[in-house]
Length: 254
Image (cartoon, rainbow, N blue to C red; front, side):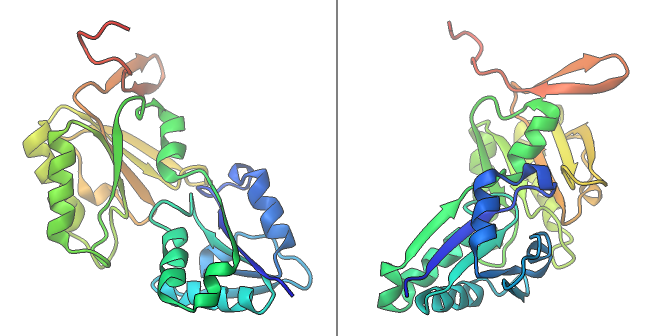
């Protein structure tokens, strides 16, 4: 019996932002594997087994999924957002590389999802309209000094920066330190967006500046986006401004 493993992106939260391909992959899976709250987002189906794990058990979770696929089951590993952005796809392929030789012959596929930075950008206008990068502030799997080095390089390159894993109880000071570093390079006037629980019932968006940005505004559900020197706000009467970053650099002829 030939099994399979599909790594599925569930999008930012709302059911209507789960892609059709993701829904199809979940519907045919014999087993759903993932961090508990993400597994809970998958509609239950008779005969389907659900394997909920802790958030920090990614490699063990990936190995378990691969073992079941090798036994002939059709396994879906679920991630919030896009599974290839700071999520389970990398963990699965790391497990494949370091695990059983037979796992390399398995039918493994990735179904993309809407990542938090794209969901947040869609609410604002086009803040990612020009060059941008994404950096995770988590130092669980890399040293904090490396995070700061990459933040500094991104700021000096004048990228729009999307910060993932901006805040947690285990890292209460990291976002404040990151904002202070960026403030010293980018200056106080570039736009900053705090986008919390995008597409969910308690969605909240705050637009401020790097000079006024308060790290306490973020929680574990918040993506923080820092603009470039070119990022602009378009004021609107009685409504939140549009935020966009022009595709053309000043002085360049289209």
